[in-house]
Image (cartoon, rainbow, N blue to C red; front, side):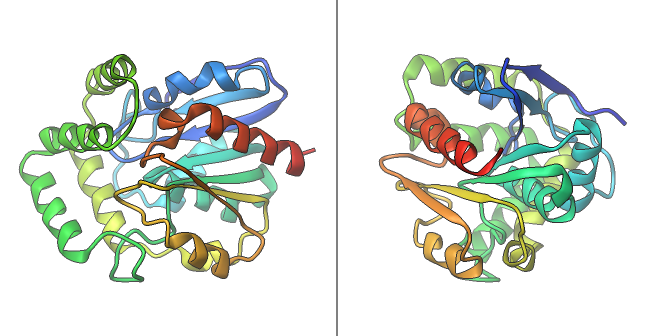
Length: 256
């Protein structure tokens, strides 16, 4: 099947943008003008989100395979939050198609069941129950939570939230991907990455503590780690100029 992919940019380096839970490629729209001169951009709606239909029985690995097949050329894979799991699978399973992996406020294991640097098991369990009762309302509340803990301009916030809420996510997609967050541990993949890797964390992230930075580096010493000051879980909207500078410098240094 074909995923919805919006192409933009005039640059030479392919850059694939993979969004987080409950959102869509629309979350990256404010970032596109800042990247367009350097990258050929592929903004992907993952299955069940935005304009891409859900596919039953998906795992992060299977989702990554769908994305890689559709992009069909070597690219930099950038994943934000949940999207970082899919980008990680692309970088690990399809290294020959991956120029670099950019992890944005993501982690190979989102649950504290696996390590201390995640969301509490109780919190994830409660969230999973709420999703099954009122998936679309919980999705909207979750998006609002991100913006309440950020320094994003009010007008920009209104525009992005309106765009994200214009297209509901598939309820099954919300349930399945929520279950991923509580049950999947991809740390072995992280340890075995063989592509240039940049991890961008945020100082004021309420979901992923910056303390994870040291552990991510311990798991894979070749990882470049950067913590963006004053940024929330959405650093590409909080601190776009800093974010773009770190991203472009890394790519210029590691992708020929």
